[in-house]
Image (cartoon, rainbow, N blue to C red; front, side, top):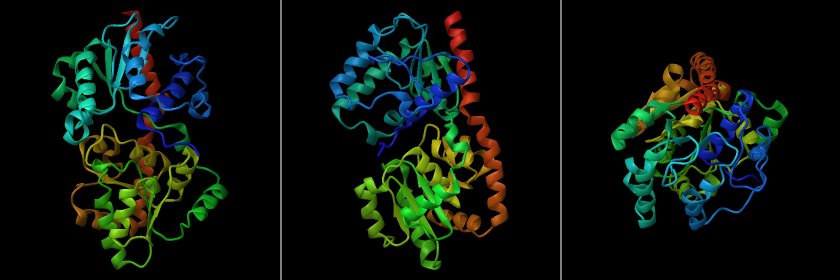
Length: 358
């Protein structure tokens, strides 16, 4: 079974796919075989063991500098830049500033050292891309001196999310996980504290105490013991289905089988799962935090992440009003076109050309 993609991996895969569509050749440096195949799973690259912390440090600080032969520009899809300017222009993507904005994410000494290096080395980047206006504002708060070199280019949604799977495949998938109740709520995302899944579970506890039907599907929760304990603590074992990490095609199938997508996160740099739900034509109820509000706009309903009663009321409102749900779905599909990787890659192409020309 394919492991769950990180946000950076999902971003890189989609960007390579989009760049291929606009005619840019992409080489993956740091591997013996550098060919990247955008229409293959994992870009056609063989799986390899996760790097140790020291291997990662060596690559980011030393290895990348010797791997840029025959390239005209290097795009680093995460925040760490090497400790000097490179021989070609560099673009660094900043997805979020979680370790600077949230104290809980840099408690260990190793983390504090790593994030202090980011602060020191990021100015060496030729250009920085923020994936949302929200992330741009965070950069302005923590790295104001870098703002002249920051460009905002939104994250993209992989093309698979614009194309439903076959109905038979979707039905096999729902049957395999015992999905049988309606309305069906779906959550896709992580399970660390900022994802705020407890608020969603508490809202569902209240909803299901009143209604005899309905279920919540948590993708990936089967791999997260604290969430499973929370489900049991709230007495929701019969109404909450926790799946393991899934292939993208299976996640697409679950989006397709859902009635409403719910996303209670308290902090994001973008909000990719809500964007995926919009592309799938699923009504979205999400937190009214800046990055997610920026993605969803008026295509979904936005709720305070801390207000359980508001989540209960909003979920009931959407699930009990088919006309409203259909209107939200139609708006969402139109909104998601802004996040197609063809459109996003075109913006990157213009940026790359400017940097290489300059």
